[in-house]
Every structure is written in structure tokens, then in C-alpha cells.
Amino acid sequence: MMDNKVLDDKQLRDMLVSGYHKLSNDKEMVNGLNVFPVPDGDTGTNMSLTLKTAVDVLEKDKSTNTGDLLRSFSKGSLMGARGNSGVILSQIFGGLARGAEQTKTLDIPALLKALESSVEVAYKAVMKPVEGTILTVIRQATQWMKEVEGVEDLTMVEFFALLVDKAKTSLEGTPELLPVLKTSGVVDAGGQGLVSIFEGFLSSLKGEKIAFTEEVKEEQQQFKQQPTDIRFAYCTEFILRAKEKSNEELRDKILGYGDSVVFVQDEDIVKIHVHTNHPGEALETALKYGMLLNVKIDNMKLQHETIMGVHHDDDHGILHEELPMEEKEFGIITIAAGKGFSEIFTDLGVDAVIEGGQTMNPSTEDILKEVDKLHAKHIIILPNNSNIVLAAKQAQSMSDKDIYVVESKTVPQGISAMMGFSPDQNLEENLESMEESLDISTIQITYSVRNTKIKDFVIKEKDILCIKDGEIVAVEKSPEKALRKVLELFSPSYDLITVYLGEDADYNKTRRIMENIEKNYEDVELELYEGDQPVYYYILSLE
Image (tube, rainbow, N blue to C red; front, side, top):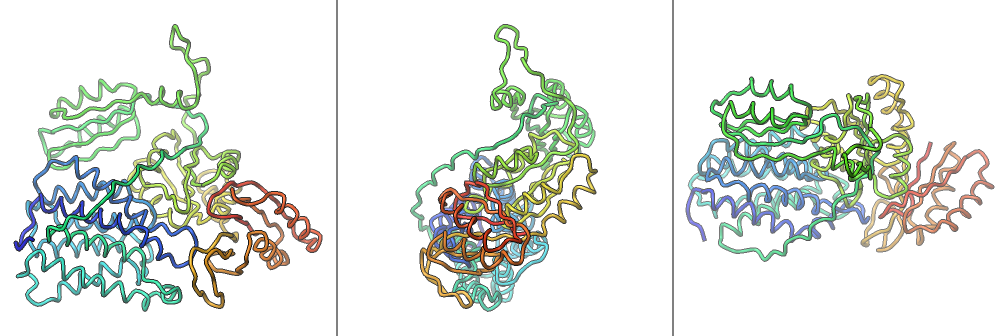
């Protein structure tokens, strides 16, 4: 067990990895703290996968400075961030890294400064911070640590033991700050995830190794997209050890070689990414400013043609079908789960559909990859899930492209937004029309994963829940009874109700229910489409 008062690079590495391991082990427990008892509790999974990417980046960093290591961990968490909880967690580590800049080792005053910075950065990342969440836990724990008399004289084990204790106390108070937690009988899931991370830190400092089974690598997310033009064929990435600390001239020259330029300098290390038709020229130019440490060049046109099934002439390497080279005015990316929904969005003109949604939130990096593939003047992202909005905005802030996030919270809102889009309109007109189109209601029908009581509903495990715009409106014993119930409840109030069939719903039974409703409610128009979505038996759009 450590009794020292300073953290060196090795101890910090071990702590960060241990924090990830503890969170990964606890992720199902964290998932189970979902306010609604539905099978979409993914806070623990999102936070764990966010840190997995951070650890992967950390392991590649050979620095012996604690400030450098925290910065690498932070950058990895930014790219791997999934869901709102993952994005906020990445901001917490971003703040820690900012507060610990240029430190070779970490003492208690440096840790307190880093924690204060993490609070500031995390709160700024959220448009409307809500108390009773992970934000509260990091803020209160930090404030209470600062108020401890003689805190600077503590050993690292004593400091982190006290930090865990303060974080747990804050977590226990979250239901008093957020009524929905109290009603559901749970503490905040994101706050619990943060406590698990701190507990992992403490275990490492005590010399207690956390038993950990490496997470199974996720299946590669499938992307559905239209054939698109590749104006610049080579994705060129390299790391340069620069002669000077300021290299604006090099950046300006790289900008002239293509698009999708990312230029990041950290002291004498410059990381450059550019899409260009002349990678050799970019590298030759860079050599005038320093020494190349690493180079990676991919032929995007060849990769794209392989994915899209475009063939070359065997003898001459000539494309049988030329793709247009003009820059599109608009490129649209959306997120949805289910083959049916993917086809619907593609038919509406979406360029790329990222497979994802509840229980499978795409990371910031997943979104950036699709952004990178589009050659369009303006790019619009439809998250279609309230838990993906922050990741989409983080991708927006990390790209040099002109990106706009239309904050669709459900797939029906995303579909409605696409109905409001027209390639003949200008950007301002499209954004206004798409935003206005979000004003529709959504009903999601799924099953309960635990016994609970919410408002007037006594819910048992495996009951079927009907959730309208975030509120439970009915509880039934079968998906069909639930569908019939909500159609009876809301058909008198709406002109058009569209039903999207999930992968586990029965088409014939659904059709018969809808035909019966149409006979009894002549003023409402009902439409049925196959969404093939997991988790939800039915998703309904009400207009």
C-alpha cells in the first residue's frame, strides 16, 4: 500500500487502468439504475466503453509525465465518448488534464486544482446542467475535499479514500435533488459510475489488483450509405517532431493540399490529418519543418469502391462507372437501429445511417468517421436519441467541417425532420424547416426489466410499458394490448398516427388491431411500416 504524497507516471497509469476495470466490472449494476425499468439502461456500458478507448490511447503513450498521460487519457475519452454520460465523463477527464498541464508528478494541491478544473469544464459542456447527476457528484466531492482541514498533508491513499467517501455521500443525496430518482428508488447512474472509477483508483493505490476480464470487442458497426464522390483520394496522417513551437505556416500550407484537415500541436509534436491527392507533397513540405515520426496513408477511393461494390477494369484499373466529383451542398447523417428504419432514411435522402440507438449509442469517433467520408458543403446530423445529442455535438466541435446538429430525440422526429428537408432550399431554410418538424409526439412500447412503482402505475417485471414523450401512459400484459390501448387513447386527438413495427412484433396481429381502430375512429389516418428496431415492439409517431 502506498503511503507517499506524490503520484508518479507509473502510479497514475495503474490508477487510470484500475478505474476503468472497476467501472467495467460494475457496468451492469450501473445500467440497472435506469429511472424507467426499460431495457435501455446503458449508462454503465457507455461510460465503460468511453474509458476503454481512453485506456487504449494511454497505453500507446510512453511519456513519463503525469500531465502528458492525463492529456492522452482525456483525448482517448473524447474520441470514445458514448451517450450523454460518456461525453460528460470525457469532459471531466478533459478538465483533469487541463488542470494538471505540464506536471511531471502529482501532489495533493495539483490534484485539487485538477479536480476544480474538471468541475468547471464538465459544467460548461452541458447547456442546462441538472443537479442530482454525475455533475453534482464531481462538484460536491471536490468542494468537500477542499474544505477538509489539513487535506494537503494526507497521503495519496488517505486522499482518495476520503474522495471516495465524499463522492458516495453526494451520490446518496442525488434522489433529494432530482425527484424522478426518488420516485424510482434509485441513485443517479452516472454518479454511481464515477464512484466506481474513484473506487478503482483507490484499489490501485492500496495495491489491490481488480480481477478483470477483457471486454469482448464490439462488432463493427454497420453503416448504410449512398455511393458518394471522393474528391481527395488519400487519407494522409502523420506525426512530426517540429523544429519550432509555432507552425502556422505549415498549417496554412497543409490546408492548401486538400480538405478534412486536422492540425494539432502539443509542444514539439505536431499531429496532422489531411485528405489529399498528393500525399507525397504534404510529407515533403512537412519535412522542411521537422522530422517525421509516423506516417499512415490510406486510399479512400479504393476502400469506398470496395465497400460499394464498384469494379475496375482488370487490365487498366479504369472505373466502369465514374462517380461525380462535385461537392454536394448538403450531406446528412442519422442514427437509427433496424433495417426498416435504415431503408426509410435512405429513401428520404440521408447519406449515411449509423446503426445505433438505445443500448448501442455510437461514439464520437463513429460519428466523425461518417463526417469524414462526406464531401459536402454543409453536414447535418440527426441523433434521433436524447442520449446521442451530446456525442453528435462533440463530433461537431472536433471537426473542421461545417456541421449542424438538429436535435431530434426520437427516430420519428428524425423522419419528420427529413420530411422538412429539401435540397432546393438554402441552409437557413432547411434548418428552420427541420427544427419545426420536430414538433411531433412519439410513443415507444417496450417491456419492464424490474418491479417498480412510477406515479400511479404498479409495474412488474416483463409488463409492457407505453411511454409517450418520456412519460408512462399505460401498462399492459402484451404488446398487442399495449398498442390497442394507446391507439384508443390517442386516435381521437391526432390526424395521423404512424406505427413502426419492431423486430419482435407480429405483423398480422398488428394489422388487425389497426383495421379495427380505423373502423371506430374514422377521423384518424393510420399507417404501418416495418422499422425492424430492437428493444421496442412498436414506435409510434403522432401528428
